[in-house]
Image (cartoon, rainbow, N blue to C red; front, side, top):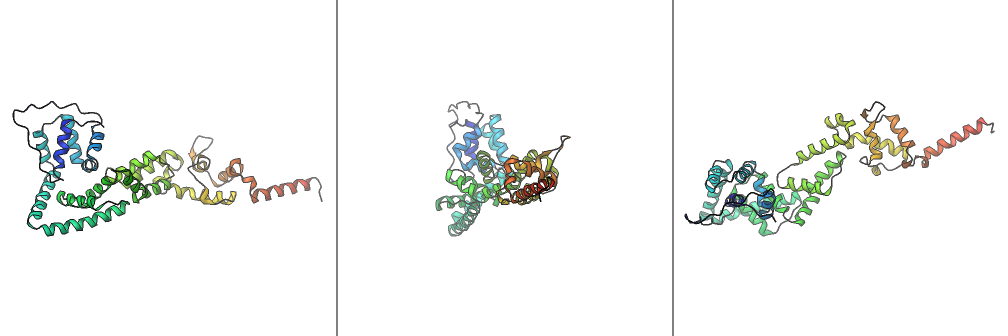
Length: 328
């Protein structure tokens, strides 16, 4: 694992105090020697993710703080500089206020604080269930208190739950088969695009922790479909999905080839010819009805010659030839 430089550790540890109640470490003595900061590794963000897990994903999902950490690392800020800049952010002002309110409540009315934790824990369970995740009680209670102390809004809470899920292989598996994964698969299918496991998992991870959302994936799917099928760009821009555009071709092919329409996959190049056809002038456009019918009947891999329609046509042609030669 890559090591984090001193300033990155300071930035993240200082931010972590806003979510955790552990007391800050004692400052170094005035005359104590301080080692010069090591140069920031190129992959310092990856190192931070590995070291701080889901917590760093939550911080990274807050643009104001993510930008601040980036500046602190690149500018080799001192503790004083970082502290000053942090105090100017809306995030700091909101979180320190909510933390003070929460700490006071725990001291003066612990019963009410506990009731709020339990209510928030049920809310977190519901959010987790929606994402297809399940956590043990200890994790849920920790998230509940951290969210109350940090004053998290619903989006930040959902990001935190997702970030907790992506920390383990089991959690990633649950997210992939849960709401987020199903949404991505359905959208990819609607736009006729295929996703590698790596791309799919990356989108699941980013949406779970709030770095992306379903709408940004929809835009990705639309732009990818337009690049793959330029002949139907106008229809895609008009709001039609790949499935809607190809459905008439699917029904025609099923009838002519006498096959189940559900077995037809228009992401397969031989079927995709319906919407990736290029005419003699080099123009990409969908096939018209006659072109599609002729293509289906003449492309041997479709097996049209074995259909009852083909056999009937062959019978009719044979009879015509026979009649031509004078067969009674």
